[in-house]
Image (cartoon, rainbow, N blue to C red; front, side, top):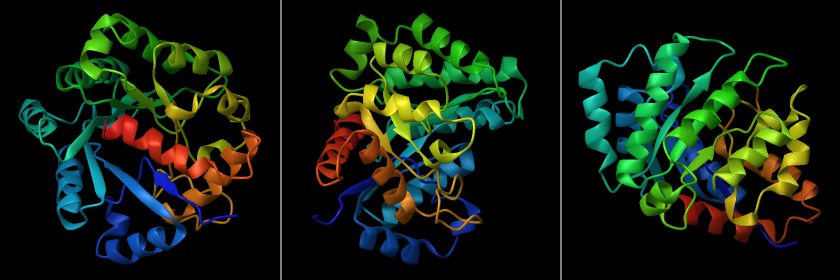
Length: 274
C-alpha cells in the first residue's frame, strides 16, 4: 500500500492546548501524511488566532465565524470583525457555526439567529459554511432546525448555486445524526465530514452514512484537540490521528485505503479552495 495522503478538514490548532507546540504537532501530522488542514475559528479571538497560524504555516487554511456556544457572547463589534475577516483570501470558509441543543451554552434563540447570520455571510462571500449540529440523545431537533434554516436561506437553490458555483455550499462538520438527515443535507448539495465521533456509542448510523456520500463531498477530520479516535491520546487529539478515521471511512467504502487519499485531497480542494 502506498503512503497515505490525508486531510484534516477541521482542526482547532488555535486552541490553548496547542499553544507553543504547533510546530511539533504539524511535523507529526506531516509525517502521518496530512497535506491539508483547515483551522476554524469559533469566536473573535480564535478566528484571529487562525489567521495568525496561516501566516506562520502557509499550508494551513483558516475559517472565521461564531460557534453556537458563543452565540450569545459575541457582540456587534465582534461580529463586525468576523465580517471584515471573511473577505480575506486567507479565509476559506465561514464558521464554525451551527446549533447545539445538547449542551445549550447559549440560548437556543441566540443560536438560531447566529446560525442564520453566519449562513448569510457564507452566501455573501461565496465561502462555504462549516456547521456544528448536536441534539440531545434520541432527538433530531437540532438537525431538523439546521435543515430548515438552510432551506429558508436558499441553500440547494439557484441562490446557492450563484454563490458557490459547483462547490459544496456548506460542510456538516463531525457528522452526527440519522441516515435520513444525511440524505436531506446531501440533497442540498452539502459535504459531510467524519470525525472520531463516529466511534462513539450512539453514533452507529454514521457507518451507514459514509457509503451514501459522493466522493467529492466526503471529508475527514479530527476536531482536535477533541473527539480522539481509538488509540489517540484522550487529553489532546492531534491532526496525525486523522489516519485512524480515514482508515475507518475507507473500510466502510469497501476500499483498502490506497485510493481514498487522492479523493480526500480533491474533495478538500473543491470545498475550500475551489
